[in-house]
Length: 344
Picture 1 (tube, rainbow, N blue to C red):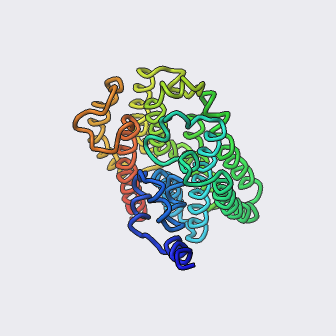
Picture 2 (picture 1 turned 90 degrees about the horizontal axis):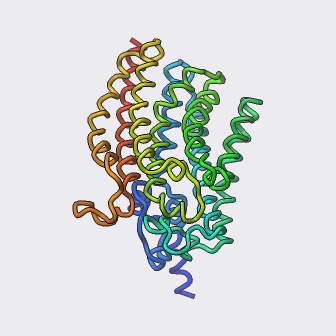
Picture 3 (picture 1 turned 180 degrees about the vertical axis):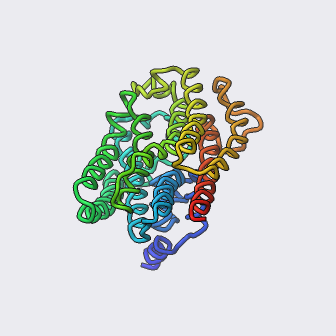
């Protein structure tokens, strides 16, 4: 009885340090470690919350643009942010569950090497994983339903599009080279353009175009991950765009996407949608040197001697994610300065 009580206490006791770790990296833990975690830590790890920061940045972008337009609403922004982050979390859970059902993650597949695939490694049963996905998805849909009632038919289309990508990204979209375009659409016009619409009640084509300046980053991150596991995906019949294009063309595509972010910003400054303050985001270009160094060469056969322990097999995706976080920080800073300048 006392053992059961201690287990319940441990399950409910917050582990704030693990929360912070799960929000920044994908912790590599054992089943014993998992059994000692609280419910929030388990959910953060199972949903791969470290990458959900990119979704938060898209929502922050939408909110800042709404503020610039003089139509910001704190409650609506919080609902949009929570709904989008829960939808992303649901997608990650569905992704792992689908791959488990299809046998993709067997035989030490790439996904199981860089972080825990909770159902594949026995941390969660299939039934528990379904419960995680169902509860997380239900929370996201509930928020979406409220926003549909508030904003009408356009919001319904946005909710339907989001649900489609959550359910069908892993299969069949990823299997037919449509996963990467889907990410560009979701992190751009759908999240930023849609979030702006929900907050302001107005659709803006300029906002949709501006969203691409950020969305190209998450798309490059996905490209990097799919280049890293190109051989493994090809062997399992998963035809991602890097599988279809080949490694060299895919590496060039990533660099082109990251440079394209500055092209979009330059265009919007030229047409007057952004002020010259947005050029502060060009400071992120100083970090492109590291990106060029990595993406100019084929993926090494094994971890380089100077690579920190625990990073491999992440190679291209690690650098792309590192750069995207830096670009996102400069981008948001530039946007804040742009808003301040426009108010003056």
